[in-house]
Amino acid sequence: MVTLTESEKELNQAMREMNITLKQYNMKINKTKTKVMVCSKTGQEEAAISLDGQQLQNVESFCHLQSIITRDGRSRAEIRSRIAQAKIAFNKKKSLMALNRLSLAHKKRLLKMYVLSIVPYECESWTISQGERQKLKSFELWCYWRMMKH
Image 1 (cartoon, rainbow, N blue to C red):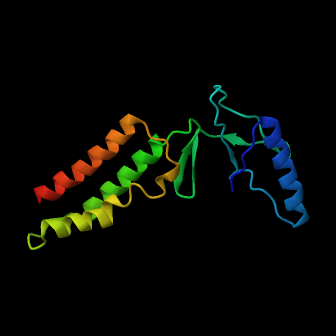
Image 2: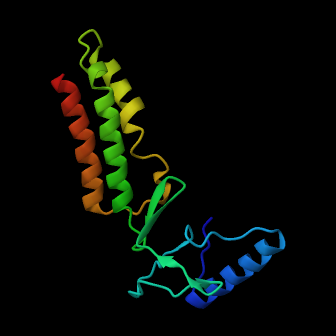
């Protein structure tokens, strides 16, 4: 679960209220699994958030719904992760790409279906710089080059 607030004070209040509500149902927040991340343009890097007197851990990034979220709001880590996953998928299908009996058009369809589809999965929320856009394009060209090589 993700809780978004505008300030440290609001987050402490939200955590207290959530904790009280959960206790009414004999449930509790796992303090070792609960992390805090500040996304700020002002340079604030940590927030003092506590639960039942225990300070919660601040992190620079975390994975939520299979996406990496970083405190700077950028998608660099997510893009690197997706490219790495797609390279693994490409290497798993390398023997398929090497089959001479497959036409180039068929190989391109396989590449798009098994490899290139991994990279943009749920990319609607990405913040992409020109350099990151170039990395994505370079990866696509790398895939086509490797496919043609076989």
